[in-house]
Length: 369
Image (cartoon, rainbow, N blue to C red):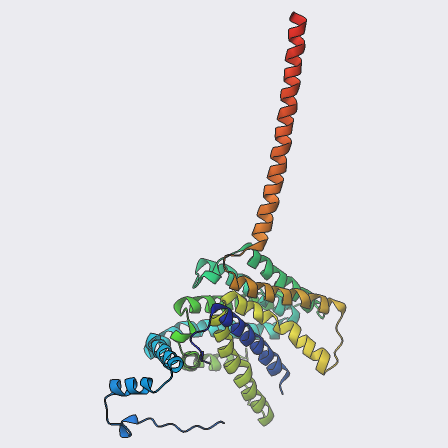
């Protein structure tokens, strides 16, 4: 999970984050479809050396090559910049409720509303992320631009086309729609404010962070189990052995590993890119049904997949070139052309009026003479 090479350039971080987010999408799609290396370590180094800690460190660095010593020094700096465990626990305590609300409302929305409607409204998370990240930025890539706004709307339009290609509206639309919007908002809030608290992945252990999130959810939210059961909102039924195995596999792959990788990809790229990447799971899931189960989909599905992919690639490029806003540049250029033409027309009109005035003055002078 940690970055092995601390000297990654901005482009390398973006490419790595891009690949990580694609991997997360594949894991999410795979988990929805559902299908040790041992090492020896000596912890007590004092038993095999007879020198102080600082002398031993210097001696170890002296035996390394120059490149290896540079990497070791960088790793030491990263360890020094890492947040203490108490601070990580405090951050996890703040965000565990946001994480729970986002996930729970999404799952309830799926049970109450057509999946296509839920997917469309959940894709608005990228819009919430764009707005919140521009108001509470964590790095220069969070700057609001018209190009990012166009890319977000392009992604939402693609999700609309993909989802509505296999959609039947149900009577339970309003409640599920509200829950979907709640889920999208809390996902964006959770991600934006976490990046504002922790601006770099080296400062926090992502597995440790999610461990605290799970622990606090377990300690704080267990009364909800009895409330949901006895109120009959969600009656608990003990799962079968097969169901329990599937739950464990889905929880490990579809939640623990994928959420950790997704957050890492967010740190490597940007909050907006991470949320737009989530939208790719919808056409990817349907595409998996086409390839593996030979499920037929109308042409509208394939038409909608293209805008989602283009939007993700566009956000990737815009995250790299922070100050580039091609849509604004095009509109500005068009506006300048229109203004120049209007100025030219006004100047020509003034010249014509001036010539006409001079001609009239000349005629009047001739009459007076």
